[in-house]
Image (tube, rainbow, N blue to C red; front, side):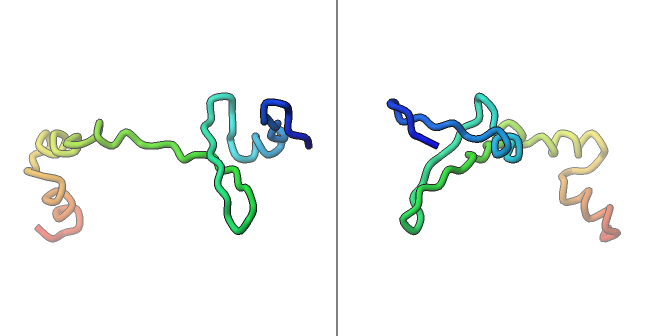
Length: 77
């Protein structure tokens, strides 16, 4: 495989399919032990959007918080 004039290479189809790399997938390069590594960048979860979500749901079911619910499920209440 050759590197093109603009520094581009084509990732073989088998590897793209195996690792789920598509047109909009972000990848990152690193150097480890003198070798260049290409890694699929892990997707980030929008956890801030979920903050407090369980609190509302637990109150609807009659529990003050998630911990109280877990304690009941585990038989601690």
